[in-house]
Length: 77
Image 1 (spheres, rainbow, N blue to C red):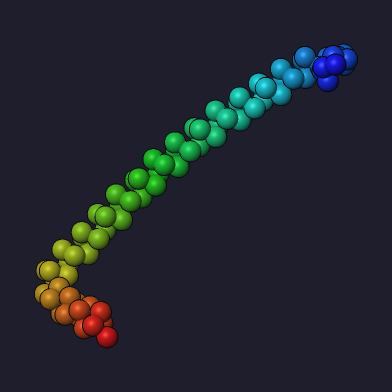
Image 2: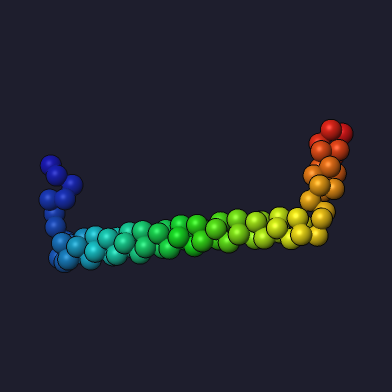
């Protein structure tokens, strides 16, 4: 005997509505995931640009070598 044999009135409509809702939620989730991935990539690019700008400023200020020396000293301890 099939558990679905005794059909409740409107059962198919309820199942279809639930499936449609699930499909909409899945589509929204996929769109949100794509948006978050894009924004994270943009943030990564901005961080990389900031790092390059800081390095350029350090070179212009003449402190790049002293920073590298300090970091090598710290890493040896």
